[in-house]
Structures are given as C-alpha cells and as structure tokens.
Length: 368
Ligand SMILES: [Zn+2]
Image (cartoon, rainbow, N blue to C red):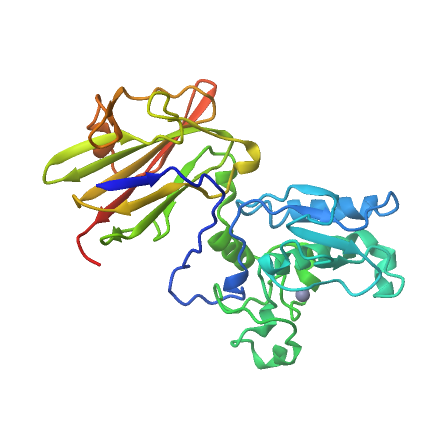
C-alpha cells in the first residue's frame, strides 16, 4: 500500500531523467537536452526592418527541427527581461550561440543571427534569404544540444583540423558527412536541410512528430517508469504529462496477499467534496506535473497507477465510497478494470473528445 502523504505540491516538476546507459555515437551534449517539448523563442531587438529576416528564421526552424520532432517552438515575439527559452539578437556579426541546448534557456543574446551581412560574410548580401535560412537551421541545432559533427573523435583525418566549439558527449550513428552540423559537409550547412542521421538523433532525444497530433497522457516517477521498485520509507513522486489541454483522474490499485483494492486520488478537495478531476490548461501541456508524493509503507505489494484523460470534461468516474479507516476513496465498482488492462498506452478518439489512458506499475518491498 502506498500511503498518500498529501496531494501536496501540484506544481511543475521536471524530473532529472537518466538517459539510457548505452553509448551512442553522434554529437550531442547530454546535459544540454531540453526536458520540455515546448521551447519558446523570442527576439531581443525586433524592428519592422528585420521582420522579413525573422520570418525566414521562423520558417527555417519550422521546416527542419520542428517538422521532424515532437518539439514545438512557440513565441517569436519581443523578449522581455525574464523571457525563458531561446533569446535571439539580430546583429551584423558572426552568427553563434552562447552554449548548447538548454544552457541557452533564458540566456540574454543566447543566439546571435545576422540578417544584413555588411561586416560579416558580405558574400551573403546577394543571397540574404538563403544564408539566413541555412545559418538559422544550423544554429538551432546548437540550441537543441547538437555540437559540431567534425568535433567527433571518429572524424576522418581530412576533416580533423576543423574542430570548433563545445564537444558533444553522446553520438548517434556513424560520422555523418552530410550533417547540418558538419563544417566538412561539401554542401554548406547541408543547404539548411537535416540529414537522415540528424533526424535520427533528433527523434532519439526529442520524439516523433506524430505525437504532436495525438492526445496522450503519460505517467512517470522519480525512479523512472520501468520496473519501479521502492523500499521501505522511500518517497515515491508521480508526475503526469498531457499532450493537449484536458482533464484527467488517477485511479490506484493495490494488490497484495489481502487481495486488491482500487482507490481514486483526491487532488485537494476535502473528504466531503473531493476533487478527482484535474484540469490541464494549455500552458501546462507537455510538461511533467507532480500529482503528489507517496510513502512506500506496509502492506507491501504491487501498485498500479492509472491515469485516464480526455480533451473535454466528459470522463465518467467509477463509483466510490469514502473509507474512514484507510482515508481512501475506494472504488466500489469495476475494480478489475484497474488491473486487467495491461501495458500498452492507448489513445483513441470518441466523438468530439479524445481519450487516452496509461498505467504505471510500482512495487513496494520491505527493504531499504
Ligand atoms: Zn556551429
């Protein structure tokens, strides 16, 4: 049984995930991978004169990194002092980023792009649109954590003197001559197009574009979502993520020697007026949100946590009663449902509303 400490902090919590411990081969900096699917972009110095260039940049990102991943890049308005995400200054100097990936989050002038090319690379004056698009696509690679491909240790000798900037520490695929991040690519910045290995690496860390259309609920814990085992007195934090605005409820099922019990999680109402449905607003989508912490305690056993979500307020809650002894809202019907549907995350449309369900299994043991 997991004793609910409190539905205490319904706050945004980003977990520190451990990436798979295999050794990949490509050029990303692991610690710089963004943890959210939505990375906002703003301009430090937008004017009507640079409006056209800003559109080229936005479109370049849309047709590359955004198109081939689950990422979205909202914003593109003027930055204020506290704006987070990628902050771009337009200046006539060498385009660059002041770091890789999420190290740019909220950093002033974190990316610098050139639209006029009077001082830097005057050859670009005749093809300002081409240069701007191609450079923007490359710099956004850095902004997602991609280092220069030619910095890799397996770079062939003919390209080895081109090393520049921060090295990556994870690699995907073989050394890629056609990478948009490779100075030794015979096509400059691969003409602003992602190579197939760029796309493979992008999707490995930032997901597949199909998931942007789906409505999906996901669950995770502070110890990951596979084979989660907690010992005595361990604190279990559970987080939920919805891909679109909507509503969800959580049903837990405990299985042990005494049988199985299902309960609904109360998000903060009192015992007479419990709140089982939680709403996720647009600005909360695609973020891990804590639904509370639990204390692994007796009786130990298997716990199934189920999240049921819909895009509209159309979810039918199971019947329940309040149990004074346990302090839980016990589900009085359909209990088998909580433990019979196995494994697969599901997403399905029904009428105007889209539904999605997922489960996570947790085992608690009487060990430290
Ligand atoms: Zn670069």
